[in-house]
Each structure stands twice: as C-alpha cells, then as structure tokens.
Length: 179
Image (cartoon, rainbow, N blue to C red):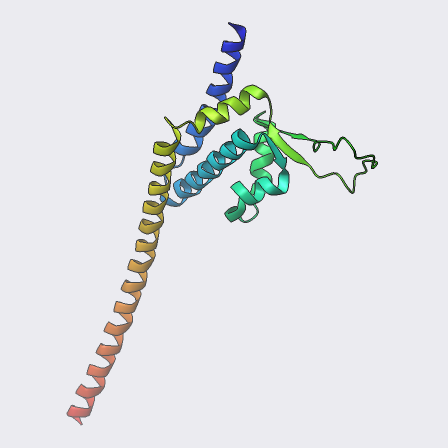
C-alpha cells in the first residue's frame, strides 16, 4: 500500500509539473515559450524513462538541443524539484583508473525509481501521443499567429510607404501641370 501511495505521489508530481508548463501563460509569446518548455520536459521525461541515466551532455543534445542555452537552468530547476538528480557514471568493472574532477562526466537520472516510472507513465501510449501531438500543433499554431502578426505589421508599413510615395508623385505631377 505504501509503495502504491509513493508511486501515486510521483505520478502526481510529474503530471502537476507537466500541467503547470502546459496551462500557464496567457499572452501568445509567453504561451509559446511555456509550451516549448513543456515539450522539452516531455522529451526529457521520455529519454529518462527509456535510458534511465545518461551523460548530462547527451540529455542536453536529445531533449534540450534547440533551446539555445536554457537547458542548464531548466535542468537545475528539475533537480531542485527532485525530479532529476546528478550521479556518477557507471563504473567499468575492469577499469582501475583513478577518478578525478577532470575525467568525471556528470550523469543525470530520475531522482528515484518512482519518478522514472512516473516519467514512463507520462510517456505511456495512452497519454503521450495525444498530449505531444496536441502540444506540437498548438506550438505551430501560435508560431503562425505570431508570424502572421509580424507580416501584417510589415504589410501595413509597406502600404503606408507606397501610399506616401504615390501621394508624393501625384503632388509633383500636379505642380508640374500647374506651371
């Protein structure tokens, strides 16, 4: 019974984190930023669920690659929330090399086996395809809306310039005809 309660708590922590990333943000650009972060969280959870532990740089490349530097702060936030933890790399049974600060690569794993299980639950066939696809669609829609707004603004600017040029040309013609 205790193990089931702990598993339920872990699932709740992961799903609450997911929901807060997906539901927060009201302005289009803020919402877009939050949804992209949620997608990175989902990718991170998938990688951890599948691989268990991996070098930090591999995690950055697989889940946070397109984030351009925000990965460090996001990873640290997930470590602070007890979703991830740092660990040492697996030891080779035949390796006798001394471990020094220069040759140890930081690895990331779920903070506990139950969190890893909760990451797997988030990526389960019942939940993952619909959630991830809906998230990706909403990201594309918001990006299109933002781009449409940018293009509309440019169109207005270009129209104003053309209108001003046309008025200037007409004024010059009228002056020429008056002379």
